[in-house]
Image 1 (cartoon, one colour):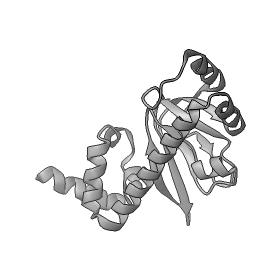
Image 2 (cartoon, helix red, strand yellow):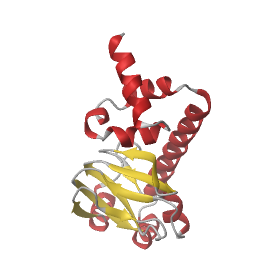
Image 3 (cartoon, one colour):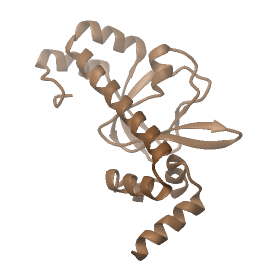
Length: 183
């Protein structure tokens, strides 16, 4: 947060009292499709992913790693049932805050509005990039961009989940990786 806006020691104390540290094991579902996302999470350690389910197939929408806020944002912001599931892909250490506590904290620490805006802007930019890439780029271009932007995730995230995120089959991903390794 300090990278976004300076926060006073008093404000930090209020913020730190409201966020609760939790540890969740791999495969924990923090929000399930059909539930209201009651919390937002800051990732200290681990990886979370958002996925949709269509005809019993999981479609990965985004992968979050350390230093990012994660939630089923639409559900969290509107306090409506989620059409996504938020899952831990690794054992995670998270800081969590529920919707109502965050709303109170916004009133107590006005600087937090700026942090919230910047996080929302980044989510919007990421969403636009994903959409543009799916519309304009080849499968190989999408994989190369993912590998360039998130090299650490290539080793930490199962290949079928990366393939799902890229909008391709695991077999296609395997062929792309083999083709790239030959070059």
